[in-house]
Length: 263
Image 1 (tube, rainbow, N blue to C red):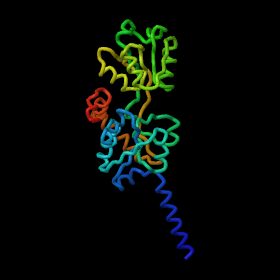
Image 2 (cartoon, rainbow, N blue to C red):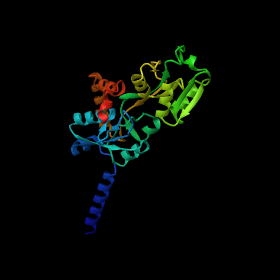
Image 3 (tube, helix red, strand yellow):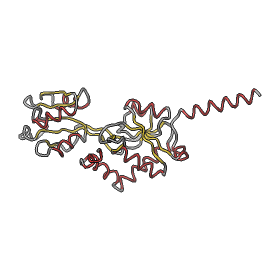
Image 4 (cartoon, rainbow, N blue to C red):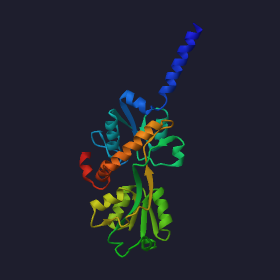
């Protein structure tokens, strides 16, 4: 009787432990459901007025699930909660503009990159008309701005140490200042500079083709599941080759047609 009780206790503990870990690729296939962790960050992930999720990462998550022939569930998190959610088994996959870094790789397994997160410069076309290079803007006569104390603000100090610097509280304020000519340049993550240029083509430009900085973005799964990474890498390679990834990226990052879906 004691042995039988010990067996059931061990079985229960085993089930509890297994429930607290992220599912493997095979388990996802067996369950018929893929749980994807995302972060609200336009146009990567957007919630429209009816509460539906749209965006680049949503399209990718739907396509992965379609190719796996399983259903998909999206779970919204703050960025600093994604790894924990994966480790405790709340989600099976991080698909949320997740930059590949050594510190994160200590906790998750990354796929190969499927896109990049770029920081670029938007300029007021009138006030910078005689500036041909970045060095031309590195002068006290030009005001370069960013939002908050982030990577963009650090780039101002690094690339434009001699310019006048201005830090704004939010994107709306700095965008309005750039359009009005109160500032000359705005360093920000894409696609904000591109969108400003598309929506204000006579006032705003993106003069530098190469990004000022960039990071590689990959999918992340729990440690120990090599099969999941092999599948994701094959998925990325396939949809780079058939240009599906590029087409979807261009729709969300090189146009503003998608904004009509928000209403």
